[in-house]
Amino acid sequence: MTLTEKILARAAGKPSVQSGDNIWVNADVLMTHDVCGPGTIGVFKREFGQTAKVWDKNKIVIIPDHYIFTADSKSNRNVDILRDFSREQGIEYFYDVIDDSNGHWVFDAAKGNMKRQYGSRYAGVCHTALPAKGHTRPGEILFGTDSHTCMAGAFNQFATGIGNTDAGFVMGTGKLLIKVPETMHFRLEGKLQPGVMAKDIILHCIGEIGFDGATYRAMQFDGEGASNLSIDDRMTIANMAIEAGGKNAMFEFDSRTAEYVDARVKLNGTKSTYTPVERDKNEKFVYELVVDLSKLEPTVACHPDPGQRKKAKDMGDTKLDRAYVGSCTGGKTSDFVEFAHILRGKKVVIDTFGVPATPDIVNDLQSTYWGNSTIWQILVDAGVQMTENAGCAACLGGPVDTFGRINKSGIKCISATNRNFPGRMGDKESQVFLASPMTVAASALTGKVTDPREYLGN
Ligand code: SF4
Image (cartoon, rainbow, N blue to C red):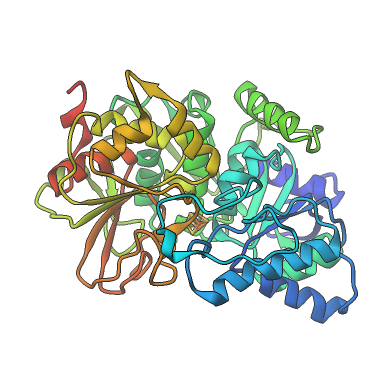
């Protein structure tokens, strides 16, 4: 069996499964957020009754993160619905925007959208917060009401996005019927060259197979090249499996995984036991691709989908209007570090936005000094509009007052996010080009798509 099949077999209580089998699996964690949470709760109450109790209050994690820093009253109300439900059900892992458990969330537009407006428990973007708060464990099953739930495949976990109806069912029973996906094999060899990042690896792979090339399939990444990658890098790659239509992503368990997971579950007091899965000698794959990381170059996915692959160095005539770094994919501390390496001591020439994925990342950037300046200050000095209000922000557009949202037609934006279908970041006539944080930085300096290797060592 492949790693994905092994986890699914275990969760189904079967000695083995194969692709195409329909099996009932037990969930270890169900995650939802402010956009899908109210709908999921509605399905749960409708199907199980107004006074029903969730299947396991310790296995439900609720993370408001999407439409938070907006004056849109319906969006603010969604956070209140999550709070009421969490209180009613005794759900501990609700990462509220405010500290008052009897209060109401109201975004104060008069304070602007740069200064933080959240309480001590707010966690930021769900997929980045889940592992950081100790909710991802190797060998487990994670369902989330969000397509990028596959990001947790970085931790040797079966993690996949589900709709509100399925999530309402999981909420009531802890089970879900799953068709076992076929597995595609991406063997990574060698090491990335300077100026090339994990984002370039996944953009390369999606470019090979197309934006629907992995539809309802597992994408397994392994090999020496994968084991050399940091956890953040693996998260970037796993996050974008869905951009090729993938059901889930999967990495092997190793000492880096153990070190990360063990530290986070200890810090947060979450469940500390888990059983990873290891590779069999006779795994069956439906597709094989060997990727020599040392040969990859800075890569861009052009409008209008993540499979439109080009090399950054061949796109110098593509003029840009804005640049954006943020999201679960591209808003981690390591992403901002590479972004800042290119921008340090220089000035951007187009509107450039920075949105850390979580409050912890804001703190990292504001407390890490390079010389006399913090990374945060270096970015601000370079002209980047940095918001402390960590969250999804303009990654998926959102209400019109969302920080960084594209509200004008014809805008071309280079972005470290993960999806670029028409209208993704706002106006339907805008265009989004996906790239690594380093490529976004270099492009922000020139106002056109630029290979970041031009700025290495400067
Ligand atoms: S940051 Fe973007 S991709 Fe990630 S969860 Fe939020 S909206 Fe989805």
